[in-house]
Length: 224
Image 1 (cartoon, rainbow, N blue to C red):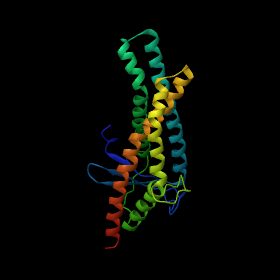
Image 2 (image 1 turned 180 degrees about the horizontal axis):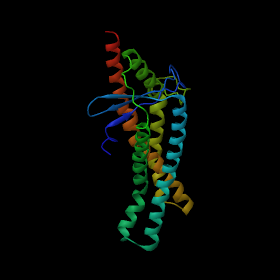
Image 3 (image 1 turned 30 degrees about the vertical axis):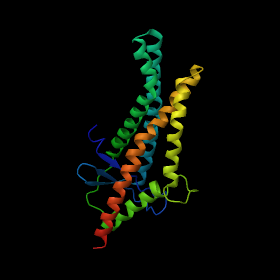
Image 4 (image 1 turned 135 degrees about the horizontal axis):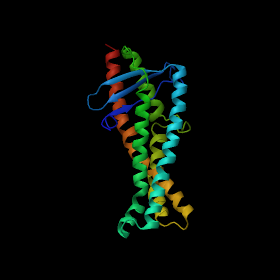
């Protein structure tokens, strides 16, 4: 858990986006020490790791809501707790699922990344600068997931803004279900939206600051 809250993972250069070379380079940043660790994957490892991540993420996404939902149902059916505690469990279940799902996802990614072989050398300052700049542009500044938005940061921050606005409406829908199906739909929707809050703070805001720091640092060293 300590390593989870101090390590920022940067994407693998798989060559599938703008200005990427496909050399399998990947960086991770220690927030406490400011140290950058470099790892590298070959093509076969990249394909295997992608499949592994998809499988683990699917299991995590399905397991968390199921476990919490079954727990809530049992609590309400058998009256295991007092009524006020029962009500609080119902009210805060989406928050618990969202928080646990975020931590589980980050832990899975950190575990998978630890399987990547470390480089026995440090990439050149020019290559480091190109890596951080390309990843920053593709994942945050331009967000290639929404290429129709050409204005910097609109795709990234706009998507999260919409999600944040939708959260209270979905949460109200969850608190007033008309059927068990509505309850499950509300639980799933709110849990997903809640997961985006720590994701936005950790993987967007904080990572953007670190990206800018590393881009400026490597640019200065590369020009020396």
